[in-house]
Image (cartoon, rainbow, N blue to C red; front, side, top):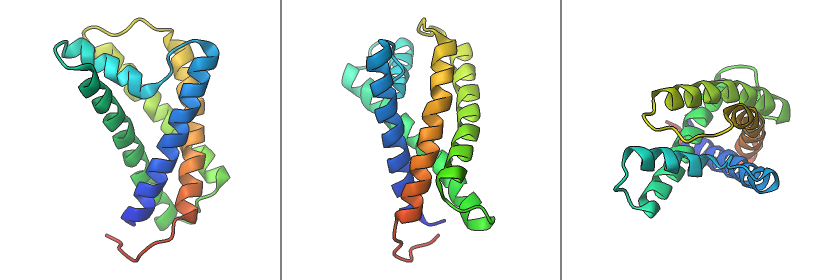
Amino acid sequence: MDIAKTLSSAIGGTSLMSLFSYLVSDTKHKNFKEPEVLSELIQRVIPDIKDKQADLAGWALHFAAGTAFTAIYDQVWEKTSIKPNIKSGAVMGALSGLAGIAIWRATIAMHPKPPIKDYNSYYKHLMLAHVFFGIAAALSYKHTKTSGNNI
């Protein structure tokens, strides 16, 4: 695994996905901001946690998920004939969107105090946000120069 390429594409993909989610949230007047939703889920389970700690945890979880997805992408791009480009990024982003939706559904179903939201709209948004994530991750991966530090 090329850690520099994987981290670079995780940061690029997760950052673009976050920007997309923040812009859509502001436009639609709904909270589709994944780190904020994660923070809210954390605060409902740990009510004594400070807002800044919950916010930091939400962002950390969001970037950790992006890194996990990108580590899988790295293996696909390195071990198959599939190469990082807009098409493969969009397809892998859509597949990640399906996985992400399944994870969010399970998390919300198991959560003792889930926030009341329009989950169908949230899940539709997640799918499109993951497509943007996949495209940005692919393009970041493709354009990251490596230092030869493969693991």
